[in-house]
Length: 322
Ligand code: XMP
Image (cartoon, rainbow, N blue to C red):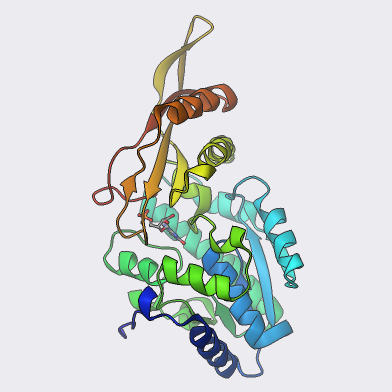
């Protein structure tokens, strides 16, 4: 396992970095075809732009609709990239992901099911269809660190776990951002000409809303956490915090509605201040904001009778719930 040479923010010259990565991608891929998955996050967006600079139309970019994304996310990302001159094809893989997640409650098993479905089933098929030899992806150093340390198995880390993607999935993986952390990626994304809404975009995990459901992931639970996520994002977008989210708990609690007992759902809200996601602290949100959030969630999200705000730091918490 080779050691990854970190490029720290203060040492990052974005133009040199971009030139070097474009050169590396071109020489590795040669005349072959490559594909990549765009999720709309800053990492995969930066990789998409680097890949298109290096390979032009020999890079095919897909948005995998796993059914676990936020409201309207697939359409919004595709139209944004269209404006940047990059054609993105949506792949409907909702059924595959929900089937793979059926009956699984353990967090790491959920992550593994998502990883296998994404890389083996969905991408395996796309690679075969397209004849591509390479997959470009936006793994960053924090993903590798946490996976190797055994804290969380990030969906996109293989080589550092001793997994050879060529053997496991039938294609090679190129990771142009693996020496950077989130702050460095944002700088590179800006230098690549991505709009501010993208290079400042809040991080969102690969396993998407499945990372925010405790217990089994079902379509119904995804719908619930999706509505709660929309409310939390609307209410906290002006906070400037690093990341904020809604989590759907498995346990129910007794509530009351219209004078009757309602054994209902619980939503937990988290809002993090962080520089690079390695450490994080909860934002001290004004009570009025929390009040508004709670009111909206119990009014607009069906079945929810309890809203809590997490006041723990990372560590010992992690940022996502699973
Ligand atoms: P944690 O929960 O490990 O999260 O404190 C740190 C940062 O990483 C994101 N995250 C993920 N990103 N695949 C990803 O691409 C994953 O499996 C994953 N798990 C967590 C999380 O949103 C936070 O920004």
